[in-house]
Length: 535
Image 1 (cartoon, rainbow, N blue to C red):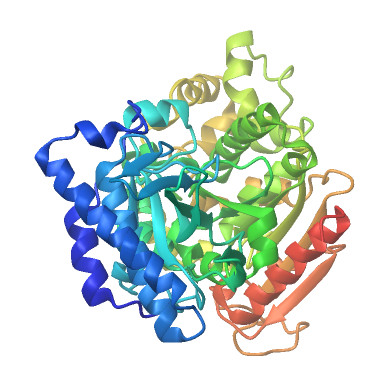
Image 2 (cartoon, helix red, strand yellow):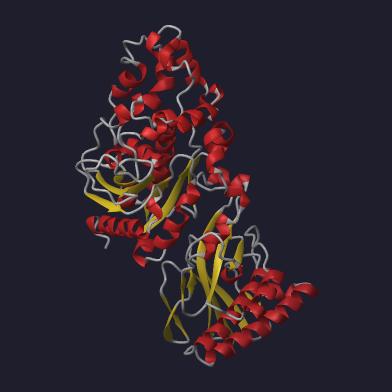
């Protein structure tokens, strides 16, 4: 939507500033301001007058809505430069009483005009025509905030909002101006000047702004080959503050990849108001050279943190019905969250049960969290996209062998666990042989003959969990053809018996980004809501 940006952008760039909440402003605080603030207050009074006149002229045409959006942006920028407390009431000269209406869970330091954010990364700009000024509400990251918000990334939290401005008369004769910030994903319509109006939105700008921030980037190939250098990037993170009223949708990337692989999936699913209202996206980021069993344990740990946060907030069934979508190796990491290991992983990976291995209590505890796990009861559905359940022969090829030799996983990456394995290897021939080449990497884990693939494909799933597959078929071959593949993973490896649905897409290994795949995800996510009685 065009909104006279030649008027709006210079003003907003000049006066938008951080809005701290460390002090409050009394209703008549402007009467005691300095000359500089008084000048801004005069500009705010004029802006409010212009906005009221623009609103009174009507919002029927595109031109009228554009003019209104420009005035709302002007008022918003001036308000930000004055307000020490975002919820304080401002008395602007003798005419206006400026009040704000901000969602209780919305935190921000700055409001970025969506129209100033360029389209660079995402395939489609999703906007909605209507009234108001689309913005990005950005709550910046800091060490103190990250300590209190374990799911916050270096970029902080971002939310798509739209500002509107309405006017009424108070009992004291002043004009009440109400500046409202709406979550533009949740709100479709607003009441302005006594009439219902569609709310404008730019649902892509926050994603473009996020992807442009250098602090959140992780190189897929470097994180594979030099995983130890990216361990500080590992974790589950949210794009906005966890919301108890929305179901976690956790996206897990694959080998030699990163969370950005989901950028267009998130953007496209964000065009669905039903999904926006009921789901919140979380991303699991990890350096993909580490063993799958290690990444799986870390996801298990971080999902526990998320569930704890939501449970304390009173999320109820929404926090107990998470959905995971895993692409490629991310599907294996996701699958391990709903499987029951018993002692089978011990036997398959280390050659025997903990008791037979003669482990001390300390050794058992160091290994147990990786080799012994129960299915997560709070995950009720998983979508696998191009997942090599039975491995890929490419992991045994010449290029894979070269790549495996380049992956560096120093023992300190795994702390005391690696030391325990080395100690066990000194008295166990099976384990000694297994560790001759060092700690197995994720590339090793993807070989059809690897111990991990064999055991992961045999562990039982938690009863009641619903599974779905989306599989690429690059050349459109019959599914019975041994060469049927997405170019990386053969159909015979991606296929799982007894899944609730299986969609075959004419695609290479990046099947999760195909429109048919995104539409299938949308269908499954809506189906999930129906099963919970939410749609």
